[in-house]
Structure formats: structure tokens, C-alpha cells
Image 1 (spheres, helix red, strand yellow):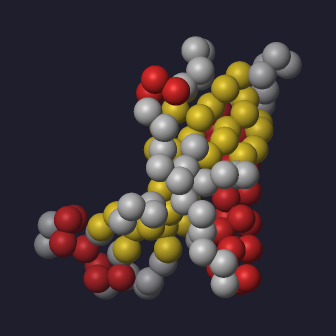
Image 2: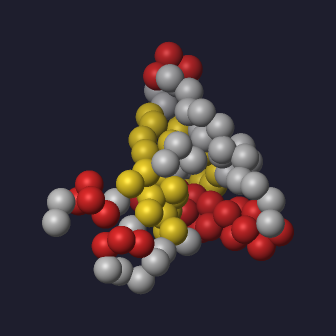
Length: 108
């Protein structure tokens, strides 16, 4: 079976793996911006979901902290029955000089 037969990503960033024979899980794609602060710490913010961000001393730590923050925000929306307010991601022209961006997966 090809990966494309059981994994699909919709525009909201949700990855559906339910047809793969696995336990159904929810995965969300986040477009994140990583910037270095004046004190050397790294900030990570979601470009496609307002209000989600975190920090860490290393990129690994900052991304791990971001994943935890994102899980909390997603669970809050789910529990309250609110629609998750996904936004289109910005283009590379909108990224500040010195910052990096990437797509990451967060499983809930």
C-alpha cells in the first residue's frame, strides 16, 4: 500500500491516518517561525494558528515546548466545541531576517 493511500492532509493541517489500520489519531501540521531572542533563547510561534507559541534554550527544547502548548490549545478548542481558527500560512517574503521557518507535526 502506498503512503498516499492512507495518509492525507487537508487544508486545516489535519492528517488522517484512519485508513492505515492504525488506531485513529489526530495529527496537525503547524507552520512555525523560529527566532532568536536577545537573551539567546529561541521563540517558536505558529504562523497558521494565532496565539500558539513557546520558547526554549535550544531549537529542540523550543519545539518540544511548542508541541505541548499546541496540544493544550487544540484540546481546549476540541473540548469547548469551538472551531479551530486556522489561518493561511504566510509566504517566505513575510519571514523576518534571521528567522527560520518549518512545518512540524503535532499529534493529539
